[in-house]
Image 1 (cartoon, rainbow, N blue to C red):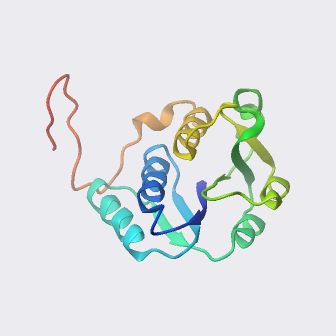
Image 2: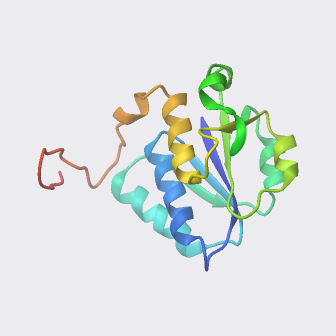
Length: 168
């Protein structure tokens, strides 16, 4: 099981990026997104509507304390940061865990996070988006198999076309 922990959500500034974190987490194989910061019912409901239409069992919920989430998680914890060890050198060790908690920042990440996790991982040592870093990590973790996931109970499904758009 893969859970994503999004740190420090701010509704006035982050609703779109936090929604994208949830959508990418879901599409790339995570089962849950937990976020800290300010509780945002609109953002949660938006994600729940998308899951309702596009299928799957993805969950989203708010937690006041990131520490509680990290301490109570029984599995491998991975903080994504451009300052971390190279993903491709560490992915084998990361895959050894049955469950994975992926931690992605919002506002400035407290130094305590760096010490509370099993791995601080960088997908690159250049500035980049936490959404992109999470997608790359999940893609490597699942070895590309997540790209073929079937989301049960979907009301909408895309029918692939070389050109154009249609739904089943």
